[in-house]
Image (cartoon, rainbow, N blue to C red):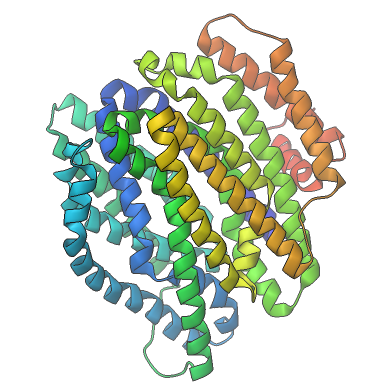
Length: 495
């Protein structure tokens, strides 16, 4: 767990700094300088691009991470493998552009009634799809080299800084709404270029074209890639379907309000993003080495540590929810999203508590079976959204998303237990859950009626102090204890 602990530690610092930037944007910048419709416009464009980008990737990012260990000792084969990992999405992008144009009428019909403004910007979506797809491939390249810090810095901190600059420029220069889209598109493009430059400068960008890959290797890669593509597509649909359907059924303004609350809730799964980026290549290497002991160790530790960190974030966010919404400019308009925050937050908390379930399945011999699980959940999510959004609006979209995610994770947990005879939980998870429950109860016993900023600061500091003491002195997580000791030592604090 040494490389996992080190990379996760530094990556977590970057992600949490990015989270702080994100909170400033979500709570203060976007609501103050943009209307709900403008927020919804940008959110839907980004979500549609994220939803459709897997179609041009054809499973290449996950395939690259999965098979990288098998070619690591043969630099010639690795260079060829990397070449095809770039060539295949490039060709599929050209094919996709033609298909997108054919389907443009469907998109126009979907959004014309409730989100007519979006129709003006449909031509920008393919550009953003290409950029996002390129970023995902580059992220896979970095991850395989066991470097998750660099791409996280670009995407979690620098991209958000660009977003903030984009919104402020748009507002103070009193530009037309298309400039807001241009700025966000340029921000993504800048990150794409910087990631390319960084990978090339590190000396890792070596490609070659020859026939060194055997027919068996090529067939294995193609089959895995096709199944991963299907699985990734269904996963993307589940994650992005709510904003798409909400904008279609309720309009961009409702989507903007939903987006603010949803982004507040998604910070809870930051620990999973940090851990999974480095655990996937390590798990892949462990499968290659047939090291089941390490796989089980990673499975348990990711479950426990993600539960503790994510649970702490959930407690801080939810206990401060009313004060956070009161701090948002035009907060009364966005307060309708408070229940969105609860349902999204709980679904994220359960998801991260299941540990590396999906990562293990993706690199195991049972990867084919996940597609059927995911497909059934896509149809369930569509039906739930069609049923609940007309009745409960943005809260209905949140409930539908939460139920779909819950079912997905439960089925995946059962599948890993059934086929691989492992599950991530033990007595330490129970201790951790009881500790988090006790921490949550404290904030129901003590109510602060001060200034909202003071309330948030007091609750957050109390939660952080109790959490730190629990990690240090209770037998819950040795990994988090060592990481916390390292942090405290560096800032010269003793607890």
